[in-house]
Image 1 (cartoon, one colour):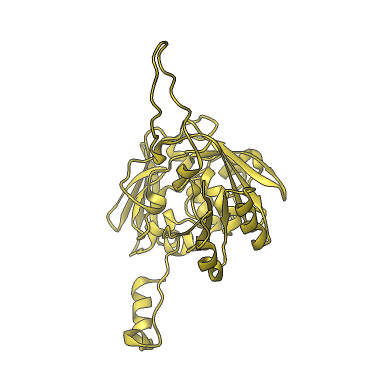
Image 2: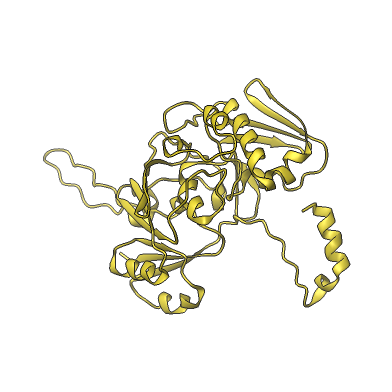
Length: 325
C-alpha cells in the first residue's frame, strides 16, 4: 500500500475525509458448507485499523475554542465540532446544528441524534453556553458576530439571535476551522469561561473521542460509534465525516525530514507539513502518494496590487469598507 504525504494548502486537514485507504473490512463468513468468493470492498466502505499521523509539534492543549494553532486544531477538530460547517467555497451547512439565517435573524437547533462522547444528548443550552465562551475569548467572533448582536435568547429548542446590522461574515465565524463555534457541554463552559479545559473535559461531539495525550509522545483518539454524520451533499469540512479507522495516533515530529522518512519506512501513515519545494521529488516515488488538501478553511481576500483593478488603493479601501473586515 502506498503511504501518504500531505502538503497543506491551508492550516490543516481533517483526516477523517481520507481515511479509507488505510483500513479494511474483515470478510463476512459464508454459511456452513458453502464457499464465498472474495469480494472487493469499495474503499469508501472499509473500516478498521489504526492510522499513524506525524505532525509538527506536540499540542499545548486540545481546547478547540481557545487554541488556534494547527498542532492543536488538527487533533481537536476530530473531537469537537462547530455549530455550522463550511465547504471549500465558504458556504455554510449544518454541523452540530441546523440553522436558518435571513441576514438579520439566526436560529440554531441541535441536529437530531447528536450526542456528546459521554452519551449525553446535546441540548440548546450547550450551544448557548458555548457561544458565550466563544464570544468571550475569540476576537474574530466578537468582531464579526458578537458586536452585532441585538438580542439573543433560547426559544423552545432553538437559539434565536437577531443582529443590529449587516454581518457578512457571521456564518463564516460560526463555522470556521480555527476557533469557530465549537460545541462543548454547558457545565464545562460555565466552569471554564476563559481558561483552558483539562483532558478529562475533552468531551466533544465529533467522529472520534479523546483517549489520552502523553506529552511529547502522542495524542490518541478512537472512533465514537454513536456519531451521526450529516447527510449534506457538500465538500470540505461540510462533507459527512466518516470515521473509517478505529484509532488515530498523532505523533509530534518537529523535524520535517524525520516526518517524511517515517512515512517512507512505514513508521507513519501520513505526514503533515511537507515542504513545497520537495513536491516534485516525493511525487515521483512509487511508494508515496502526495496530496494537496484544500478544504477552504481560511476566509481570505487577496488583491493583485501589481496589475489590474487591484492597483487602485481607493478601490481596495472601498471594497474593504463594504465587507466590514
